[in-house]
Image (cartoon, rainbow, N blue to C red; front, top):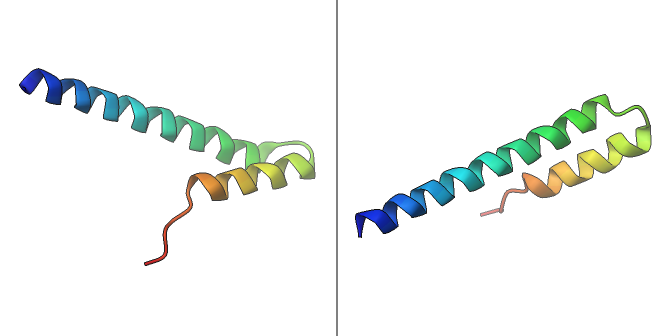
Length: 55
């Protein structure tokens, strides 16, 4: 059983790392893109990625 928990923890950590990387890339794009359309689109994607549930 400890091996299963260790693998689950590893998968969770890897997923969290990839999610953080994706959010960071989109946030940088939202700030640094040359065109206003790309910045706007990146902000919309960022809203979806960091959406919080109300309640």
